[in-house]
Length: 466
Image 1 (tube, rainbow, N blue to C red):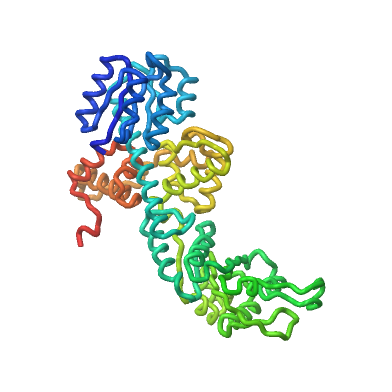
Image 2: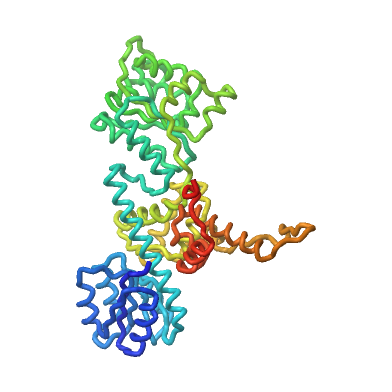
């Protein structure tokens, strides 16, 4: 991250000089200001400011007001507040108003350098996420599908390829992974986009009523049928019918659905009149349908009719690198819809959420951000703002010494330690898609330290060895 621009705002000349020299030696572009007015002038220039170190009390104004002005111009700029008048109230106010951190004078230069590295890593990640989200939206135009991982990009590429066709699609994945979002993306990027998208959850409607919901019924067809009813196949004419949780459909109804897919026609319940079906069917399930076929719970012929184009949605734990991007997406969304002002997520909280297994997938993550938006409301989301089950993930995990074993012939201590260190670094890099910033956060190392280790050890992605 060398070359990033850092603004120092403090009326103490000695402190400005010390900070300038320390940051300049690290390769940063450093600008200094002795007053609020001078800093305002600097911040209005075209060049972006990545980080500002701002004194809380300036000769001509308040440091927090200056912070707001800087962040209004340089929206991804992180701010560290410096003060000789430290108090809990000041620290709380500073972080609530968007400061990355609050540090009291006098401080150790090493301490401030660690904070600078963390703040810049967070700023870089935020910028990268915004740029990637913008690029993906421009390229794919798929509302609400957010991600940069290889797994989700493959899903997007598949959507783009199948959207133009009229083939049946089977979307599989765990609950909460966004199967309906994928179905909508296919529909709204297809020639049928101007026609209806009609969803129905096959698992949420009793079997005896599902047939009527799908195909409609005529008056008097059964007890309670007091009027004609239009079914979902008819409502979706010319468009797309999304059959969610298709694996829960009864065997008798599976036969009737197979006929519609094969012959493109159906009869409403109680009617002798045959209606034509001009509908693209997209089905979805969290169930292993191949196993259900083997066990006789799902018709094999219907499975193959539905599984013309299979699309598997990865679980969130399989795309950890997308979690910061999704968090930013939902934060912005709830800020807008709930009238909140959450400014971001601290590195510590981000580390915990990135490593959490997310059994409820994206739905669970979205629900968590909504909860934070309601209860926190504004400022930076920190580790202590997270529910207890997420906070427990912050406890460091180390190797169990009882599981270590030394062979009878002994071992080379230095080689063993070096091998273990290599394994930890490679595991962190693999988890983050070789994003060194995120890997450094996982390992709780300075980014520069991690980069030096990678170079020294000659570590590189496996594809480079091909």
